[in-house]
Image (cartoon, rainbow, N blue to C red; front, side, top):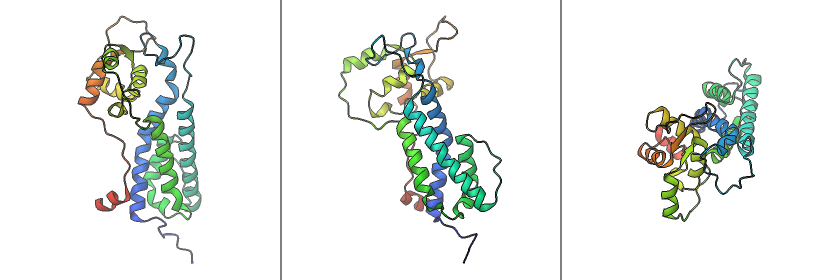
Length: 233
């Protein structure tokens, strides 16, 4: 017997799916930065991370491009399924952020769509894969304190600082290009005064950025577990 208003997902699964969808707009921005801004790593005063002078950075990050394309394709698939099975017209933005917001707004319609049982897993996996690109898993490092002290005195642009941060351990994992820009926009850090050429990116004293990053913690991405969701209901 056909039950068009039957829910194919539990309440916990619906809430978990909604949480994943609400992470995507910000995640899509981070992926866009990682995908398109790698070419700025070679700017004046940049920390080159052992790169030879003859080497040039890639104009994009292939891993970020793959993660962004996969995340977008997953969302397109689920939007199309909902529209076809629930007789809905899609009038939202076709960007990754727009697709995720539409699915979040229509999450109950999604939950009433036959075949939706794999949506939480599929969307969750795409989100986790993209998050891993933006914030790679921490690795245990044995850092020479003198090298850290030396790095703190350097003047780097946002991309250079984000690259350096990957070498500095878990507490700096979330120090991305976007995080540097957020600290600057909030007035927590200021660029080194010029004058510089108009097309040169702003540079910052690394130590000041590291200190302000720790002094003003950002909202960390977190995986919402089924247990936590059930307690919140």
